[in-house]
Image (cartoon, rainbow, N blue to C red; front, side):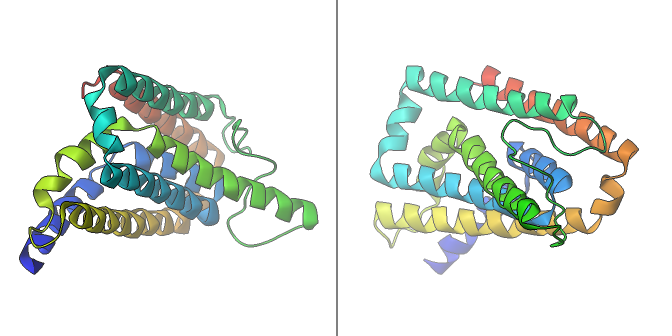
Amino acid sequence: MLTQLLAATGVLALLTLVPGPDMAVVTRRAVSRGRTDGLLTVAGIAGGLLLWGALTVAGLAALLAASAEVYLVVKLAGAAYLCFLGIQSLRRPGGGPDADADSGAGADSGSGSASGGGAAGGRRGEAGSGWRTGLVSNTLNPKIAVFYTGLLPTLAPADLSPAAGMALLVLVHVLLTLAWLGTYVYVLTRARRFFTRPRVRRAMDRVTGVVLIGFGVRVASSTA
């Protein structure tokens, strides 16, 4: 069992490290809002994985993956959300506070400084928004359902029941995602002073926006 689990962990680690929409969403939130918001975005992404994992263990994700109509609806909704985030990044004035529709009030400094109760309340709203952004972007990604129902059963340890094996691998995937994206947020925000310079910020907004729209188009045009 241990050998199978280590092999499965290696495969999941490689898949986790591949850049994708999650990394683009985290980059956008961490650079514009700071470390706390970036980490909560990562937590939202992990929440999406846990949701898909629970649906997979219950057998519902397999139904979605097998239903062309439902898969299409979720796929287009996810693609539209990624494109929405990308357009918001492209439209945001460089160097200014994030004006996203889902961002709440005020800018999160990410440094723990406060200028009063209103600012603290704004940061709390933005933190929740980061979590929601991560959760929604991952929940509307039907590729996870296909990944969990198609690949995970082949990696599950044979000594465990199918449900227990799948649940274990989902947990491993969530922990790997938290570790990788959490480290990425830490490294990214260490250099946040550089990334928040107006010219650099404008360039980052443009690049991130184009990448998110590109992922949205890719999701929309992909097949199950």
